[in-house]
Image (cartoon, rainbow, N blue to C red; front, top):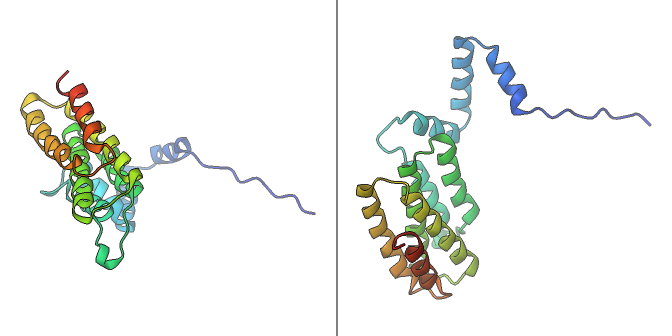
Length: 182
Protein backbone atom coordinates (compact mmCIF):
# COMPACT_ATOMS: atom_id res chain seq x y z
CA UNK A 1 0.00 0.00 0.00
CA UNK A 2 1.44 3.34 -0.99
CA UNK A 3 1.49 6.16 1.45
CA UNK A 4 -0.42 9.29 0.43
CA UNK A 5 1.27 12.61 0.87
CA UNK A 6 -0.70 15.01 2.98
CA UNK A 7 -1.75 18.03 0.98
CA UNK A 8 -0.58 21.25 2.51
CA UNK A 9 -3.22 23.91 2.76
CA UNK A 10 -2.25 27.33 1.58
CA UNK A 11 -3.17 30.27 3.73
CA UNK A 12 -3.58 34.01 3.28
CA UNK A 13 -0.04 34.40 4.64
CA UNK A 14 1.27 32.29 1.73
CA UNK A 15 -0.69 34.35 -0.80
CA UNK A 16 0.42 37.61 0.81
CA UNK A 17 4.07 36.57 0.58
CA UNK A 18 3.68 35.82 -3.13
CA UNK A 19 1.90 39.14 -3.73
CA UNK A 20 4.74 41.01 -2.05
CA UNK A 21 7.12 39.63 -4.66
CA UNK A 22 5.06 40.97 -7.61
CA UNK A 23 5.90 44.24 -9.30
CA UNK A 24 3.22 46.79 -10.20
CA UNK A 25 2.65 45.39 -13.71
CA UNK A 26 2.30 41.81 -12.47
CA UNK A 27 -0.07 42.91 -9.70
CA UNK A 28 -2.21 44.90 -12.14
CA UNK A 29 -2.32 41.89 -14.48
CA UNK A 30 -3.42 39.62 -11.62
CA UNK A 31 -6.20 42.00 -10.61
CA UNK A 32 -7.32 42.28 -14.26
CA UNK A 33 -7.51 38.47 -14.47
CA UNK A 34 -9.52 38.27 -11.24
CA UNK A 35 -11.79 41.06 -12.51
CA UNK A 36 -12.45 39.13 -15.73
CA UNK A 37 -12.95 35.80 -13.96
CA UNK A 38 -16.03 36.55 -11.91
CA UNK A 39 -18.80 39.14 -11.73
CA UNK A 40 -18.60 39.20 -7.92
CA UNK A 41 -14.99 40.38 -8.20
CA UNK A 42 -16.09 43.19 -10.51
CA UNK A 43 -18.83 44.23 -8.10
CA UNK A 44 -16.38 44.25 -5.18
CA UNK A 45 -13.86 46.35 -7.07
CA UNK A 46 -16.51 48.86 -8.18
CA UNK A 47 -17.73 49.16 -4.61
CA UNK A 48 -14.23 49.40 -3.12
CA UNK A 49 -13.22 52.22 -5.46
CA UNK A 50 -16.62 53.95 -5.53
CA UNK A 51 -16.98 53.51 -9.27
CA UNK A 52 -20.29 54.09 -10.98
CA UNK A 53 -23.41 55.80 -9.80
CA UNK A 54 -25.02 52.84 -8.11
CA UNK A 55 -22.42 51.19 -5.91
CA UNK A 56 -25.20 49.59 -3.85
CA UNK A 57 -27.30 48.55 -6.85
CA UNK A 58 -25.83 45.06 -7.42
CA UNK A 59 -26.10 44.28 -3.72
CA UNK A 60 -29.71 45.45 -3.64
CA UNK A 61 -30.44 43.31 -6.70
CA UNK A 62 -29.10 40.29 -4.79
CA UNK A 63 -31.31 41.18 -1.83
CA UNK A 64 -34.32 41.52 -4.12
CA UNK A 65 -33.64 38.15 -5.71
CA UNK A 66 -33.27 36.23 -2.47
CA UNK A 67 -35.76 38.05 -0.25
CA UNK A 68 -38.52 38.82 -2.75
CA UNK A 69 -38.24 36.04 -5.36
CA UNK A 70 -40.54 35.57 -8.32
CA UNK A 71 -42.86 32.86 -7.01
CA UNK A 72 -44.43 32.46 -10.44
CA UNK A 73 -41.05 31.23 -11.67
CA UNK A 74 -40.74 28.89 -8.68
CA UNK A 75 -37.87 30.90 -7.19
CA UNK A 76 -37.20 30.35 -3.51
CA UNK A 77 -36.11 32.67 -0.73
CA UNK A 78 -32.64 32.34 0.75
CA UNK A 79 -31.74 34.24 3.89
CA UNK A 80 -28.16 32.93 3.64
CA UNK A 81 -27.69 34.31 0.12
CA UNK A 82 -29.25 37.63 1.11
CA UNK A 83 -26.91 37.94 4.08
CA UNK A 84 -24.02 37.07 1.77
CA UNK A 85 -24.78 40.21 -0.28
CA UNK A 86 -24.38 42.36 2.83
CA UNK A 87 -21.26 40.48 3.89
CA UNK A 88 -19.75 40.98 0.43
CA UNK A 89 -20.37 44.73 0.63
CA UNK A 90 -18.90 44.83 4.15
CA UNK A 91 -15.72 43.14 2.88
CA UNK A 92 -15.49 45.35 -0.21
CA UNK A 93 -16.20 48.71 1.38
CA UNK A 94 -17.58 48.52 4.91
CA UNK A 95 -19.01 52.05 4.76
CA UNK A 96 -21.45 52.38 7.70
CA UNK A 97 -24.00 54.37 5.67
CA UNK A 98 -23.95 51.80 2.86
CA UNK A 99 -24.22 48.94 5.34
CA UNK A 100 -27.13 50.60 7.11
CA UNK A 101 -28.85 51.14 3.75
CA UNK A 102 -28.42 47.48 2.75
CA UNK A 103 -29.58 46.21 6.14
CA UNK A 104 -32.61 48.46 6.02
CA UNK A 105 -33.32 47.45 2.43
CA UNK A 106 -33.11 43.80 3.53
CA UNK A 107 -35.83 44.50 6.12
CA UNK A 108 -37.98 46.39 3.61
CA UNK A 109 -37.77 43.56 1.06
CA UNK A 110 -38.41 40.83 3.62
CA UNK A 111 -41.37 42.63 5.19
CA UNK A 112 -42.82 43.53 1.79
CA UNK A 113 -42.52 39.97 0.52
CA UNK A 114 -44.11 38.51 3.66
CA UNK A 115 -46.94 41.00 3.43
CA UNK A 116 -47.59 40.53 -0.29
CA UNK A 117 -47.25 36.75 -0.43
CA UNK A 118 -48.59 36.01 3.06
CA UNK A 119 -45.41 34.10 3.83
CA UNK A 120 -45.72 32.21 7.10
CA UNK A 121 -42.13 31.19 7.88
CA UNK A 122 -40.92 31.68 11.44
CA UNK A 123 -37.24 31.29 10.44
CA UNK A 124 -37.60 33.99 7.80
CA UNK A 125 -39.30 36.24 10.37
CA UNK A 126 -36.53 35.65 12.91
CA UNK A 127 -33.87 36.50 10.33
CA UNK A 128 -35.76 39.71 9.47
CA UNK A 129 -35.99 40.75 13.14
CA UNK A 130 -32.27 40.01 13.59
CA UNK A 131 -31.43 42.15 10.56
CA UNK A 132 -33.75 44.86 11.89
CA UNK A 133 -31.63 44.94 15.06
CA UNK A 134 -28.40 45.07 13.04
CA UNK A 135 -29.83 47.93 10.99
CA UNK A 136 -30.66 49.80 14.19
CA UNK A 137 -27.15 49.25 15.55
CA UNK A 138 -25.58 50.45 12.30
CA UNK A 139 -27.94 53.43 12.11
CA UNK A 140 -26.75 54.58 15.55
CA UNK A 141 -23.27 55.04 14.04
CA UNK A 142 -24.53 57.55 11.46
CA UNK A 143 -24.65 61.34 11.78
CA UNK A 144 -27.94 62.63 13.21
CA UNK A 145 -29.14 63.97 9.84
CA UNK A 146 -28.82 60.58 8.17
CA UNK A 147 -30.12 58.70 11.19
CA UNK A 148 -33.58 60.31 11.17
CA UNK A 149 -34.39 59.20 7.63
CA UNK A 150 -33.28 55.63 8.37
CA UNK A 151 -35.32 55.50 11.58
CA UNK A 152 -38.42 56.69 9.70
CA UNK A 153 -38.00 53.84 7.19
CA UNK A 154 -37.47 51.34 10.03
CA UNK A 155 -40.71 52.60 11.60
CA UNK A 156 -42.49 51.73 8.35
CA UNK A 157 -41.00 48.22 8.42
CA UNK A 158 -42.11 47.89 12.05
CA UNK A 159 -45.67 48.86 11.12
CA UNK A 160 -45.70 46.17 8.44
CA UNK A 161 -44.27 43.73 10.99
CA UNK A 162 -47.39 44.10 13.11
CA UNK A 163 -49.41 42.54 10.27
CA UNK A 164 -47.19 39.46 9.94
CA UNK A 165 -47.84 37.57 13.16
CA UNK A 166 -45.37 35.61 15.31
CA UNK A 167 -44.78 38.76 17.37
CA UNK A 168 -42.62 40.32 14.64
CA UNK A 169 -44.00 43.81 15.18
CA UNK A 170 -43.76 43.49 18.97
CA UNK A 171 -40.12 42.41 18.70
CA UNK A 172 -39.41 45.37 16.45
CA UNK A 173 -41.18 47.70 18.93
CA UNK A 174 -38.89 46.45 21.69
CA UNK A 175 -35.79 46.91 19.54
CA UNK A 176 -36.78 50.44 18.56
CA UNK A 177 -37.36 51.30 22.21
CA UNK A 178 -33.97 49.85 23.15
CA UNK A 179 -31.89 51.48 20.42
CA UNK A 180 -33.73 54.69 19.50
CA UNK A 181 -35.80 55.82 22.41
CA UNK A 182 -33.21 54.91 25.06
